[in-house]
Length: 393
Picture 1 (cartoon, rainbow, N blue to C red):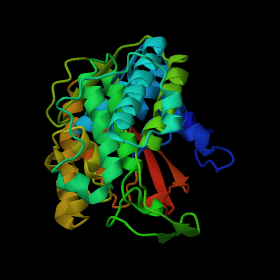
Picture 2 (tube, one colour):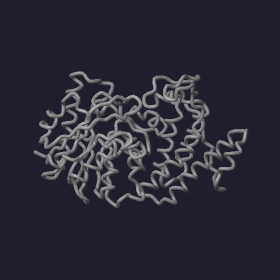
Picture 3 (cartoon, rainbow, N blue to C red):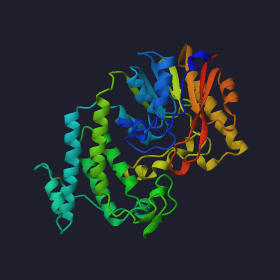
Picture 4 (cartoon, rainbow, N blue to C red):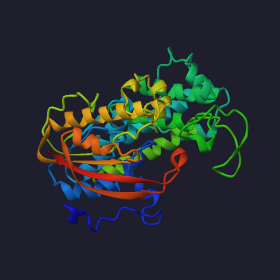
């Protein structure tokens, strides 16, 4: 199989692989730390699998593997312990009536304008002009635009809280067919509306309530004072990304499972696996979307994360990580057809994967490395990423 990878080029420069290609259509639907660029599964799925195959990603994350499997005309299964991830990927992979989707996004936005106009004695002319429908009234008898949630009160200005809670109320009570799409718009707006320095969007240290020097923009910046502009912006952007993907989306089966990949019943035979396991001690996969868990009122299962940031990279953390990954791969093996391949994308700087692969009942068939040099935010340093091709022993 070594010849199969002989001519594969993966060390793209920014010019060769610009951001718009790395975040095209639904790949850029919502920010997510720790995802690989879609060009990697695009290449390897075509090399090792064929149309009609069923591909599993037991560490689904933002759903990159599922999206690229679908584009390659393959069935896809994704598993994740994070409920928010499952909602996000279900939005990416959904089948939509585009006209209906556009109506619902605009309807929710218009109702938001309507509520805010009623609440604010100073009528906003621009908002009034953007009201698109006459039937935008909503019963607001039980609407409250304040909260006792400590996280929300800590990280948002009063106006932002008011606008986000109003939008949350609208989508919750609007009987929308595509409710999860509206939840993603709410989540993305909540992320942007936090009182966070622009260079700390990934991992904010503390709320910023005064003007500050911004190392990202090289000038004085000001704390975010509203959420409405983000809800408006992401309403348009979300619709456009889903519409773009709908033009190339294949009519293949997609299953998204919320659960623990170490013991979940997949209940299907799979042809292969393409996955990127969590990186040891680098990312808290729940807390990176903490705002979403608060506004969407989702239950966290961060205690079930494998290799969480809070446990670091100690010897014990490494052993726990190895055992967790081994349990996932052993469970996956139960459903993998004879001769099926498992392809793993990982930064194995602790050299843990030779033991993981052996103890999981797999044989390493091939391995290729690539240099990653375009990370932003907290993970801005260069590092080497391995793509390991394994087969069932």
